[in-house]
Length: 331
Image 1 (cartoon, rainbow, N blue to C red):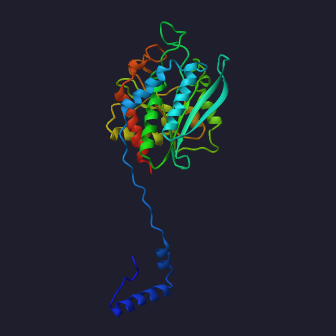
Image 2: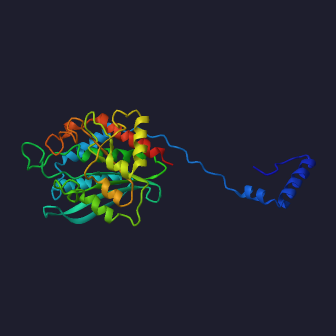
C-alpha cells in the first residue's frame, strides 16, 4: 500500500505532506521509542494430535518379535538397528552412544544408548526416555528362573509409546525440540545394589551426547502398558521434579485419564533411569505402574508372564495422549 495513495484533490496532498513534515520534526523521545518497538509475536498453542494406540502396540510387538533383547545377543543388535532406523525415518537426528560396560557380575558388554533429536537447534526441549534392554533371567518367576523372557511391558511399552509420539511429532511439528533416549543395560542389576542397575543412563549422565545438553524436563516411561494400570506420583519424581509431575498429571486429568494418573504419591522406586538424569541436572519424572495387589510392580515383573498378553492398547493410549498434550502445550 502506498503511504498517501493517489489523490486528485491537491488539498489532500498538502495535508499529507504536512503530517509527514511535522512527524519527522518531532523530538518526542517516547514517541520515537514507541515507533521503533517491534511488535510482539505471540506463539500460539498447537492442538495435540491423536495418539494411535494400534501403532504404538505394533512398535511394542516388533521389539518382542526379535526375542529377548539381552545385551550381547543377536536379538539385542537387531533391535538396536530397528530402533535407530525408526527414529531416523521420523526425521530425528540419531546418535548411537557406544561404550564398554562392566556389570556387577563382571560381564563386559558394549552398551548402546539410542538417542534421537527433533529440531536439535532449539534450546527449549523435552526429553522422553525408556530402557530397551531385557533382563537376562526371569528371577522372580517360579520356573525357568535362569532363562530370559519376552519382556513386553518392562521396557518395550515405554519405547513403543515414545516411537508413536516421535511419529506424531514428525507429522505435526510442536513449538519445542524433542529428544527421545532409549537407555541400554537398565535391567542387568542385582538386589541390594542400586548402582548395579541403570548402567546406560548412568553412563549417559556422565557422558552426555551433546556438550552442555539440557532439557526443560524429562519423562521416563517404565511399564506403561498393562491393563487397568495406575500411575501414582512416584516419590523421587515429586522430590526432584515436582513441577514436571504436576504438569503431566494435570494434562492427564484434563484429557480424561485421571483413572490412570492418580493424584497420590504412593511409592518410591529404589532406582530407575530418572535418578541419574536428575543427578545430571535435568528434572526428570518416572511414569511407572504401581500395582495395588502386590504393593509394588505387577505380578508379571521379571517373570515369563511379561509378554504381549499384558499389553493393553487403552493404557498405551492414556500414556501416549497425555505426553502429546504436554508436548503441544509448551510454547
